[in-house]
Image 1: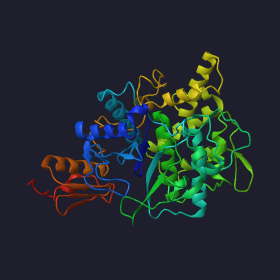
Image 2: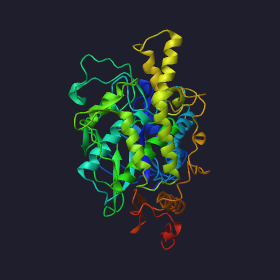
Image 3: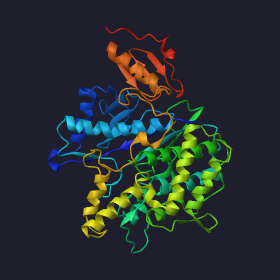
Image 4: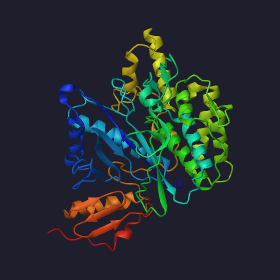
Amino acid sequence: MKRLAGLETEYGCMAPESFGLPAVPTRVRDYIFKKKKLGLIDLHDRDYDEPAGNGGFLFNGGRLYLDMGHVEYCTPECLSLADVVAYDQVGEILLHQTLHELHLDGEVSFIKNNIDHYTSATFGCHENYLLSREAPLTKRNIDTLLTFLSVRILLTGAGRVGMTQSPRRYGKMESGEFVPYQISQRADFIQTDIYEWVQFNRALINARDEPLADYRRFRRLHLLLGDSNLLPFANALKVGSTALMLDLLEADALPDIALYDPVGAMRKLSHHPNGAWNVELADRTQRSALEVLEEFLAAATSGKVELDEDGRWTVEAWRFALDKLRHDRAALVGKLDWVTKQYLLESFIEAEKITWRDNWLESLDLEYHSVDPSKSLLVGLPGTALIEQGLPGLAKRDFFLQPPPNTRANLRSEAMRTILHKKLSYVIDWDLIYIGEGKQIHLDDPFVHDLKTLSNFRAPEAK
């Protein structure tokens, strides 16, 4: 890709009440850092809500910590779709392996989803994209980007049984509406187009200007509207299509498409998994959401931006998905999460002679997202493995211990190994590392990855 990207996943946890929470996430975090020694835990407070020991950076360049009681795993900064998806899967495998090694896997489950059916709480899958500070953030371009983010759920939704009906918090729903199954897990919880503080008002675009890099050159687009994808095809298409839209944004070449109500449009699309998928444009006319997605695809292939290998994979996957959504949705089983989950649940309903109102389906919904392969509904479904998606440049490396070699994650990991070997004090962040007394490594250029940049740095010897 032309830009760095990464995912942050907040994992749900199911455990007996007798265990207490966050007892299990705490045990898992401590085991990963203190027993498995996959990273360096924070020695200092990071913020008012992140005290020392709350989490730390991993040797693969990512980060793991506790956020309001749940485990959150962040991928390292990645420059390829294959890396984004592979490092994201590390979180799933790592949590399952840890539960197994702690002999908790028979009683505890980690769930890679975005909704707690019992309390209607939501937890997110956050996307991060590096963006040029010079990108033309005009009203026209922002309106178009909001449109894309609203309609892309047809490609990226993870599917969900039921709905959240709480007009006070999430806006008025259609009167008397019963939604047995919907496309997106997060749609009912998104409240506005653009907002800064995510804990108080979830938005399509998070406006917080926190680049975690040189603020004079870069922005970080932080998105929290998306679902956590289990299927590698959908995960790669989510990141790849959004990255292409940002390529068009930086080139000031986005098509001129604006929705009257992007949040309402996304929710309406989500509530109608069987169509018709129409959206209301800013001029109050109606248009097919698939046609809107086709116009975005046409812009990506117009020649106004150059397509690299990841871009070419994305447009072919995008074209395939749109065609099959129209003519052969069964071909998307194993490709798009919401289609796959709907197929599996409908098969179960038919076999068991039950209805969509049966509570059994909420349990199965959660099992679809289990990180335990023996429990996941995806077990045995062909064509779902990462290696089968044809993503360009899928590396053969230890994604648990080795970072991407072409981003600053490589430098962070090398510095961490020096710290561990020499038993030095440290403060580690995404863009800056303090080692010992007064020694600093600046990582404000996230594309700098050459280890030679560390050759002039001599860490103090251990006392």
